[in-house]
Each structure stands twice: as structure tokens, then as C-alpha cells.
Amino acid sequence: MSILNNDFLALTLDNQEALAPFEFAFPSGTGFVEDTGILRLEPKQSSRISLVLSVGVHGNETGPIELVNQLVAAILDGRILLNIRLLVLIGNPVAANLAKRFCDVNLNRLFNGAWKKYEGFEALRAQRLEQAVSDFYAESSYKAESVKLHYDLHTAIRGSMHEKFVVYPYVENSVYNKEQLAFLAACGINAVLLSHQPTTTFSYYSYLVHRAHAFTVELGKVYPFGENDLSRFADLKTSLILLLEKGAFAESSLAYLQVFRVVDSLVKDDDSYELSIDNEVKNFTQFEQGYPLAHSKKSDYYIKQTGDAIVFPNTNLPVGQRAGLMVRPIALDDLQLT
Ligand SMILES: O=C(O)CCC(=O)N[C@@H](CCC(=O)O)C(=O)O
Ligand SMILES: [Zn+2]
Image 1 (cartoon, protein in one colour):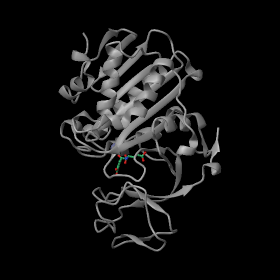
Image 2 (tube, protein in one colour):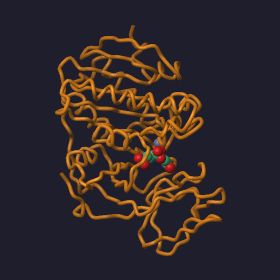
Image 3 (tube, helix red, strand yellow):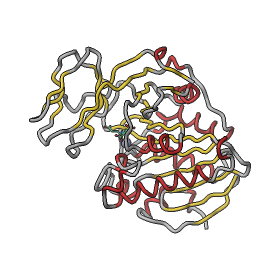
Image 4 (cartoon, protein in one colour):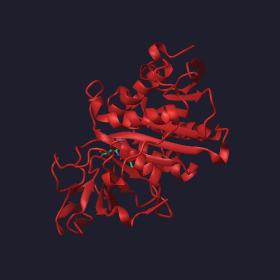
């Protein structure tokens, strides 16, 4: 058996909930479709690098899905010669078919076992994806010496003052990896947001449980399938191909990165919760000290310091969930790098 037309996305969307496993050969290795949207590609030569590329954890974030599907097709037809271990995950095929962010519950809030508190497709899927990542890293023949990577590719609801940025999941010792940051800069990333606390996101799961270099990578604004300008991902594509073919990390100067730390997490604490911003306000928009940003029957939030900026503002979610992050620029020199 093989993947028809080397189109892993079509196979996944045609089998949105489950797919019987099968194995196949491609020019530079062996492929294993382990379930719907779960594709493991093993190169002929052993490699220390195990890379997880996840896309479509939010079903309507189609640009990264199309990009990664192109890379998979190029590997399967021999235009890219794979030299590292690769796990490709299309996170939420059911929501992708519906062109929705999620069906019942936001999949990217269900990792680190949070899925146990929910029912429905997303809860099952989070468990399945955690298992797929665990199995993949465990199957590396290099064990302790393996280099574990996870880039969880997204696009954002709003435009952004920094078109491409990453969320660097919370790391206990506040030491950040220089090689990874230089690689992300080479991928065209403009900004880094240092997460301030443990979460239930996919990237934090891979860091917490597997000590992978893991990032949520935001690549621009959400568009439907067929309407993405993939040329905007050119630097990312070039850097990923170098990694896939040569096991090498492209590098750009860290000076290209604007770093932010999280000052506050805005939480929707009541149905009356509102943000005093209009729909056109972009991620990383800065405010003046004292601006009344959020209000509900239970709380008010005023900007603490001029220059503080908002990221991921969204009130269209259940009470108790994150309605945005308040971030503050910091100097790269203030970061501890290893
Ligand atoms: O544009 C938005 O408001 C959300 C974009 C998005 O899906 N972002 C991720 C970030 C995950 C993280 O904080 O690591 C999410 O909200 O799940
Ligand atoms: Zn997303």
C-alpha cells in the first residue's frame, strides 16, 4: 500500500477519525501511516535527530498544513532525500474538514493529560497525539543522545505587528537554547514570546515530558485551504529542507529577534468579560499605562506599563480560559542562553 498521489493531507481528510496502519517504501526510507494524520518517516541511515512537525492542531489553520503536505510529497517522490527521523502530525482532521478551529473543545488546551477531563474527538485525539510523540521519541536508536525537536505550526486569528513569532514554552531554569533561536530566526521568525507558566499546549507537553526543543510557531494569519500565499513561508521551507536533508540547523543572527516576556495572562472570568479593543487590533499592539483593557462583573485590568502589548486576544471562549497574554519587550542580552 502507498499514499495515493503522495497526498497525505487528502488521505487524512478522507479518513478524518481513524485509519488502519500501513507501511510503505519511499526513495530515502520507510514510511509508517500509524493512524489518521500520523505519519512516521524513517530514513535509510540512522539519525540522532527526531523531528516532530505538527500542523492543524487548530483545524482552520491551513497554511502550515499545506506547507508540510508539500514537504511530505517531496520526500515521498524523492525530490527531498530524508536524512533525519520525521513524525508528521495533522492534529485535528475533523475540525479541518469543517474549517473550524475545533469541534467541542480547543485541542491545544488538552495536553499533559488535560484530555482526561473531557469527552469527544479532541479528547481522544490529544491522548492519541501524546502517544504518537512518546512512541516516536522512544523508537530512536540513539536514546539519551537523540536530539528531540517539535515545531507545532500555527497561524493566528489576527494580524500581527511581528508576522511570524514563536511561543517558547515555560522552561524551569529560564535558560534558552541559542542554536534553536538562531534556527528560528533563519526560518523568518521575528519575535519570541517567553511563556511564564506551565500550560496544557502541545509544545509544552513535548518539552515537559520529553525535554524536546519544542515551540508553538505562529506563521501569520489564518486563511482557508487554497487561499494561503505559501511564498510567505519561503525561509521556513528552505531551513526545514536543510534540516531534513542534511540534519543541519540554518542560522541567522539573534539580533533579528524581538524578545517578549509575559507580564500577565488575561483570563475570561465571567460571561460579561470584554476587551476594550476592536477586531482590527493586531497581536503585539502596545498600550499606554492605565488604559482600561479588560472589564467584567468580577474584574478590571489596566495596562501596567506603557509599551505592554497584547497577544492572542480572544473572548469567544469558555469562562476560565485564556483571553489573551500581556507581554513586555526585553533585551536579548537579558536572556540566559546555552
Ligand atoms: O490567534 C490566536 O488568538 C490563537 C492562535 C493560536 O492558536 N495560538 C496558540 C498558542 C499556543 C501557545 O501559547 O503555545 C493557542 O492559542 O493554542
Ligand atoms: Zn493555532
